[in-house]
Image (cartoon, rainbow, N blue to C red; front, top):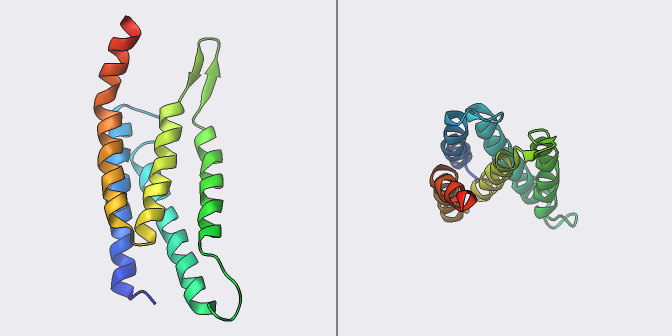
Length: 143
């Protein structure tokens, strides 16, 4: 069973990691920004914590799989991300924002189950991708 301090630490970590990606999206004035990414990351973390807690409460009594609830999060976040995508004659916009919401959810799930190394590494790589690879993308489009 996780200690209350461990639970709080995981939620705060999810807050900070989600805010890193959210700040980048906010800076670029995207539809899903700072607060959205924080809430997605923390919500996913909480759902994973609840899943682990339920597993601890009932293990040995009934067959449970804590990953099943996480799979539901991944599906549900797809609907939230879909709301940021706008189709027009020129193509689709908002795909990167949808992907950033999805990755924030995955980061929250990772923090929730205590996989901090993966969560922090993914946050750093995602931030770098969102911040700096756009320039490379534009250069490739110009050629």
